[in-house]
Length: 267
DNA sequence: CTCCAGGGGTTCC
DNA sequence: GGAACCCATGGA
Image (cartoon, rainbow, N blue to C red; front, side, top):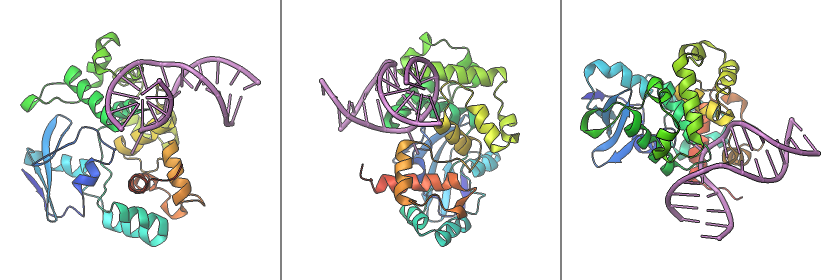
């Protein structure tokens, strides 16, 4: 069991249900999730975050995944100080955190997310892991590797019931498996270049690319792209996005999403 | 039955 | 360059 004494306000309920990740499930003993083949349960106890099922050797891994090394209080304070509207977003979900998820898993799950709803995304991702991923403890499965997915045919993935997205999943997996889409290279690229490279994958447009950059590559500069978000943006930021937030749009995006979810906008 | 869900590709003009 | 329409699923 790992204990992070000061979680800096991390709210598991808000964070894991926020739509940035699709494999975390709430059980009676906390949030259950799998990342890089590691099965854990995350629980908040007062100011501490308890990660059960994790070994001490993985402390750094989970600290990074949960972004516990980041000074969020300073970041949120900056948000609230510089923009009244963004302050409302922070107020709507102060414990929201942007996770650092594995690149390939993020890319594939957000390809699946296109023109789709969260419950069905979860279902497809779960079937994908059961179908192609390595078995772990307690009947759970790791997210499949690029090689595992690239070896598949679209016919063998019909059980996913993912529709046309299967072709996109396979293209992305093959690109990563053969090395023409390389995480290390993407991380080394300037933001716009990495974004353009991601969009060379079939089925990866601005929204999927930005989500992958934001959640899977740690680029907190992704712009809000989808229509719904744009609508929230227009209402919350009628005069454009606050200049003070440049470089932090990704986090702001997540806050805006939470705010908009709690305060549905008129059509 | 229709509508739509955290899009993107293709085809038109 | 942008608007219209297509794409499979499944829940409301």
